[in-house]
Amino acid sequence: MVATEAGQEQGARGWDPLVRLTHWGVAAGVLLNGIITEGGSQIHVWIGYAAFSLLVLRLLWGFIGPEEARFSAFPPSLSAAAAHLKRVTRGEHRVYRSHNPLGGLMAYALWATLTVVALTGIAMAGSPLSEVRADEAATEYAEEGEYGEHKESQEEEAEWLEESHEFAANLLLFLAAIHVAGVGFESATSRVNLVRSMITGERRRVQNE
Image 1 (cartoon, helix red, strand yellow):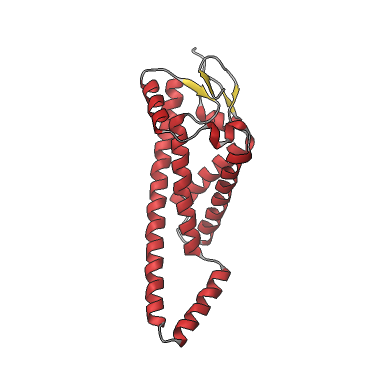
Image 2 (cartoon, rainbow, N blue to C red; image 1 turned 45 degrees about the horizontal axis):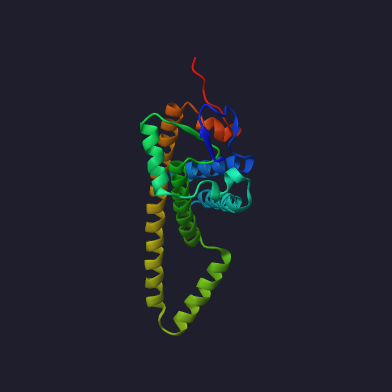
């Protein structure tokens, strides 16, 4: 059973350790690279690699992890998200073992955007192997007298990557802000501390004093 009425399960197991580790690890990476580190710096690049590695691990866990962590537990559905939002506005709340429909959509949006940020960042940062291939290509174009066109093409590609990376990074921060606001609103209205549940793995409804 994926969801129960909020008052029926006081300590439903919500998130396993790997889900919590990847969640907070990715969140820390996004915060550090989005606000603190300098773009293009070595630390920025390595934090990006670490965050993307955690994302890949989380996506893999979505296929082989426990029931609550699997994608099948929170399939993307606009109609289900709209119905959930309608219930919330009416003061009706449920405790979900996995993401609620609206939170699930946000998770997919965040993951997709982070993937774009990571892949464009990796393409910009390059690797020793890509640098060797670039040098070989430059030599080949120089021998054929087309180095100028090759360099111009490279500059256009680099500019496109940089703009795409920056746009996706800003979109990621925007979505993250909406996510935080949504978590705060849902926690307040449902009296289920979603932040604590992502730390402890348990969903406990806050009792009235």
